[in-house]
Length: 428
Image 1 (tube, rainbow, N blue to C red):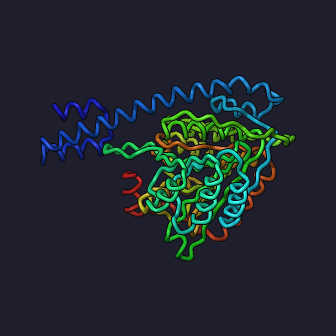
Image 2 (image 1 turned 90 degrees about the vertical axis):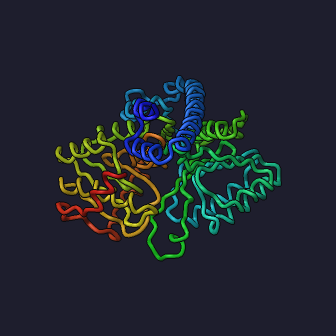
C-alpha cells in the first residue's frame, strides 16, 4: 500500500528509492515518518498556493501601469520585457555598482543610518565574523524606533538571531527544509530601505573564503528611482509571507530622478519564471551571449538553446568558478561547461569564487540578480532578475569578464570528461 502511495505521488526516483529502503528495514516507524513528512509537505504546499494568490493580487495592481510610464510600446526593450510576465518596465532610475565587499558595507551602513521608517533586510545567510558592523547599524536604528524586518533563509548564528530579537527586530525564517527534500529557498538577497533605496547583494561570505587567499569576484548593485518601488513590493510580499502578518510600508519620498535609464525587476515565485526569462533572453540573441555565473547546471531547454546559438555562429562565452562550497555542484558545472566548450563556446574556469550572476545579450541587455542557473533552484528557489539597458552597466560587466579571464583557465580540450564529472552531472 505504501509503495503504491509513493509511486502515485510521482516523486523523484531518488526519494522513491530512499523511502523503499526505509520501509524494508523499519516498516512501522518508516510509515509514521512518511505520514509525518507528507503532512509537513502538504501544509507547506498549501501556504505556497496562498502566497501565489496573494502575489497575483499585488501584480494585478501594477500590471496596468506598464503602458502609463511614457515608454514607447514599439521599443525593443519594451517588447523584450513585455514577455517577462508583464513586470513593470521603468525609467527614471539610477544605480551604483560595487565590486568590493568593503565598499558595499560602508555604503550600506551609511544608508541604514539614514533610514527613517523601515528596513526590510532579506538575505540568504551571513557570516557572523564579517557581519558585525552591519548588525550593529541595524540594532542602533531599531533602538531609534525604525521598524526592521530581518528575513533569512539558511542557517545563521544563534547569537546573531538573539541579538536581533533582543533589540526588537522582527526575525523570520522564510522557509524550512522538509524531510522529502523539497526546499523552497529564498535567494532574493534584497534589501529595501524606506522604499527609496534597494540593494541586490550576496553577503554570504564563508569562513574559508575569508581566511584563505582566494580571489573573489563580487558585484553588488544599489538602486534608486522608479525601480525601487517594484523591489519594495517584492520585499513587502516576502515579509508578509514570512511573518504571517500584514504590514503597511509606503514609499517615504517622491522620486526626483528624471532620465531614460530603463530597468525592469522580475521576481519569480514558485514557478519557472526565471527559467523562461533566461530562455527568452537567449532566444533574443543575435551576435553574442556572455554568462558569468556562480553555478552552471542548466535545464535541457537552456542547454539546447545555447547549443543552437553556438551552431548559429553566435559568440557564446561562459565563466564558472573553480572554488565553490559544494564540490558536487562544481564538478556538475564543469561537466556542462565542457559540453559547450566541445561545441565551440569559449569557456573559462575562474580561479576563485564568483558570487554574482550576470548574462549579457548582444552587449545590449544585462541580466543581473540573485538567480542561480541550477535546475533545482530555478524551479523551487525564490529569486530575482534585474534587466538593465544601459551602456555603463554593459561596459562594466564586459570589462569585469575580460579582467577575470586573466585569472581563469580556458577549457581547450573538452573531449575528455572525468568520471567524477559524469557522476555528479547525473547525480545533481
